[in-house]
Image (cartoon, rainbow, N blue to C red):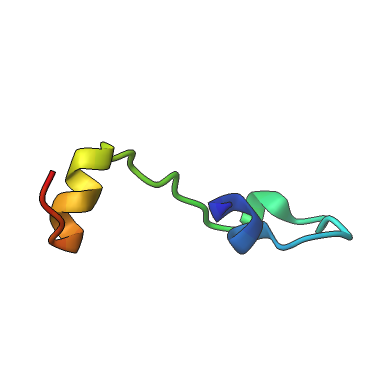
Length: 40
């Protein structure tokens, strides 16, 4: 999904190497819930 936001959709751009893209870090589902304030 992050790549779609960075690169766009069709038609594919010719200069994809010029587009800055950083792969998001994974987080566990427990960490996600903790950030949302939901107890397990």
